[in-house]
Length: 320
Image 1 (cartoon, rainbow, N blue to C red):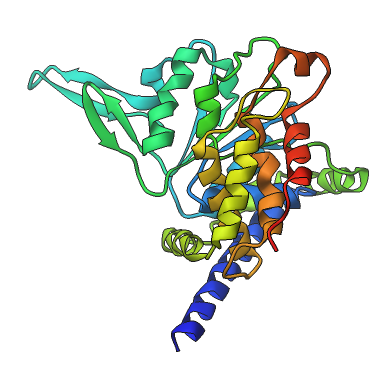
Image 2 (cartoon, rainbow, N blue to C red; image 1 turned 120 degrees about the horizontal axis):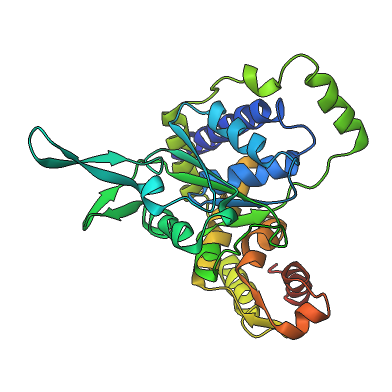
């Protein structure tokens, strides 16, 4: 009876995922795999960094997720003159009672879009570190808890663009995943043109799942089983980044945890109660590559972090 109930719960979680996936897909065309990774980051309790050229749909994808869920959404447009207090909030003196009252910043929301995050100074970028790692912020010497769920989607332009500041390693490690959307096919681009003849499809999108359903799926993700062999497989992959040629700084245990949790989310999406090796391999590059610091020699030879992860995946035996 308990096994049957478990299967029914997992099926419910899969249905919620597909409902949300289809709602976002109605707005964001030609990005099915990107939507899948976005939702894996969201339901695994992590944060997401989207890096790509302007106009590829980064902000649209983030807004489509926010508008598809009945949660509080705030957007922060990062600019060079943005201050940490513009994100966290500020205490203002009330002249009537001569006391300070704290006014919450946009970080106090369930879904936070940090748009063009690498256009702000490192000092302002660091305002997100505590929030993303511990779901709290420190203001005026006091710790304030953030809402649950709390999910940051950050977008950034490539670092060689004018007016950008590269994110420090500590900030990059806070993001569960990073990936690029890329350009869609010509046929899909024609469909995008047709859909926006009169208005943008995002203007018609409505919430399709509730806060309670989000909590349900997140709890089910935690219940997805993962064998000891696959835990060893994850640790072997991450440990290999610390000794691989061309990598100056490998991934930390935080990378191992992120890879496990995202794989659990993917397994639930596919209707499994347990993680398969394919789920780990599918997401390894997006979870680990941005955490690596490449050596100067590898940069000169145009070897990328993604190349290194791909090589590691082919060199480590897959558990039977």
